[in-house]
Amino acid sequence: MLTPMRWALVMLLVGSCGVETQSELDLLIEEQMDVGGVPSLAAGLIVDGELVWEGYYGFANIDAKERPTAHTLYPVASVSKLFTAVPVLRLVEDGRVDLDAPIDVSFGFSLVHPEHVDTPVTLRQLLTHSSGLEDNWFMLGQTTFEGDPEISLAEFAREYTRPGGEYYVAETNFGAAPGSRSSYCNAAFALAGHLAEIGWERDFRDLTRTQIFEPLGLQETGWFLADVDPAKLAIPYSYNPRRGQSPLEQSTFAHYPAGGLRSSIYDLSRFAQAILGGGELEGARIFNEETVQEMVRLQIPELSNRQGLVMRYDTVNGRQYVGHSGAGLGGSAQFLLRPEDNAAMIVLTNSDAYVRARLGFREGRDAIERILEA
Image (cartoon, rainbow, N blue to C red; front, side):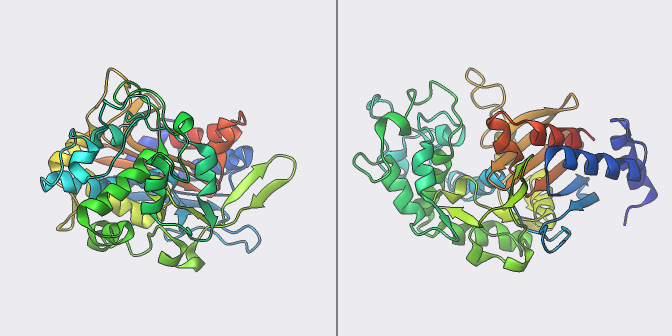
């Protein structure tokens, strides 16, 4: 329950966008969802270690008229990368690897840019989208499966990066020389997840379960359909103004550390509290405070004015946030932190709004942005 002081804070925040009451905020959100073709939305605001406001709108399952709750599981897409960072960066904390050492030296994994064979790729480059790896969307599609993946993360990483590999195409899997350009790459984070497996000698799903989910009490979050309660899953939808909402299959890709997580407002709010707490929540530490500080520090200012270590900067209503967005088929999400205010906001949807925007259909993206502003 919100105390009067907490309620005043929430209303001060929403009032800055011209919304004066809770009902006006609800109305704005619902109107924007209708304009943008967003079937359901779950949102939370964290301040000083508390989830001080939460809101749930629309239908997680349209046919069943099922409303979302704090425990509804949404596909969070690239917000997943923040979770992938934990087992990877804990290797660095433990002194097992160096962020700036060549991958083959740190992990014994051969990664060679076909046009820049003498320029090594480092872990920092993988985590800042500056490794020279590129997303070959045809191959990423080939390794996406209805249900859970039919190939392992290790197989994807090896066959995507090894000359002659099943998913290897030199011209499209690689771009600029390592360290020379910022180019957002999901495949790089899939590789980082597999490198964590090599470093810890354990399965990536097991690593995140024991290093994040269990310590923080994230009982609902999981990567594969086999890891979560199917009754809590939001149905993913694709929207077309003429035909309306079309349900999509629940699918998972072999490069899942890049964006395959399913989570809820409840679980993500606890993850946000841990990050804002310097890597610790209720006595459980997922990484060191120095690691959090490094994640929010701009890493490659000569190449990008947005890129921290895994985290990325965004501006909402003229205020700077750090965290990550997520754009997937049937899931558009935002996980945004204001460390200086000890605050965060989270928005989850079962909408393809951000993917549609990349194709020029911006109504859904713009609607979510207006909701974020409010």
